[in-house]
Length: 291
Image 1 (cartoon, helix red, strand yellow):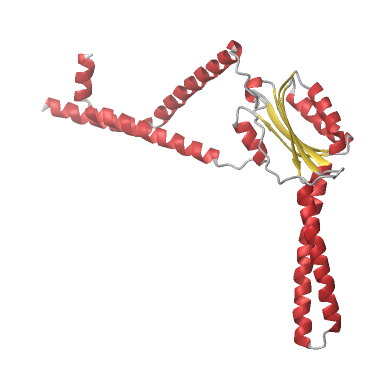
Image 2: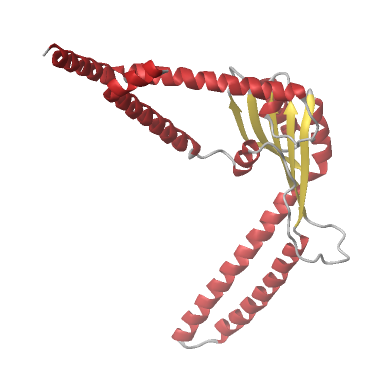
């Protein structure tokens, strides 16, 4: 130990060079990670659920419901995490089934096909056929890791929009009467401008209503597929699972080994800088000792 300390005291420049190189490597790695994390994803819901290790119900805040309404508008979103044998085959089956039921594929993404294959698929299914689709998708898996169904009742929102629409339509009718009876050019132009503004509001409200109706008619299903359960969002059971813990520990060890190997490569590549400096330092030191 004393010999090591003496060597450090006698080779301060070498130690300083090593510290600088390690600092540069660490700074480079942190910069690369920050750039990677800023890359946008396909879908906000895919990014949120894949970055988490569980699927928790999202609270939906709504106003007091209006009573005595039989056909309520409910927007349904379902999330399934499935452990499967072959990701690509299941992915194709999911899209094909969605089209057979009268739906369509919104987006799909496959990652790490050569290692632990994972995929995110978002499909739209007619709401009346949602249970049928979910049952089929469950049958494609080796294990349903997690499932979450969310419903957002937008009936009251639709009714509020309908009330506003009727008000704007009455206003437009009165403005049209004024327009037909106007004789002064300035009044005609001003009334015409008001009619255009009211019509824009009417079109906007109808667009919002159409959006609510279509979303209620076509339920959205987000499916997460992987050959490895740990690569999927799942709801923790709270039980002690040695197999899962062993896999997590093995992955951590592999990550550490890869990190050390990466560091060694960086040091070797930067050898074009620190090796000549080290040789110059040793040469100068040797010349001083000779004198």
